Length: 86
Image (cartoon, rainbow, N blue to C red):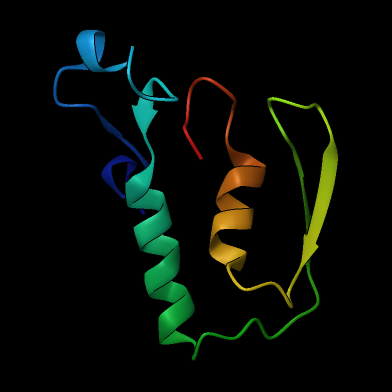
């Protein structure tokens, strides 16, 4: 995995950051993890729990392997607010 598999700059970073929810675009990470998830039959083969904090409300939420979009939960859990949008 390389940096472009995780994040990229917005096309016009200093202008677009005003309209985006993060400094960098981490869509490549979502795409990379989604590809791995699909290659494994859309299944997680181990128990997992990830935690996230809602930036707006400050509430802590946990997600496990049974949710509809575990890739989004994993990326959201590891994203630094205001740096990465997910």
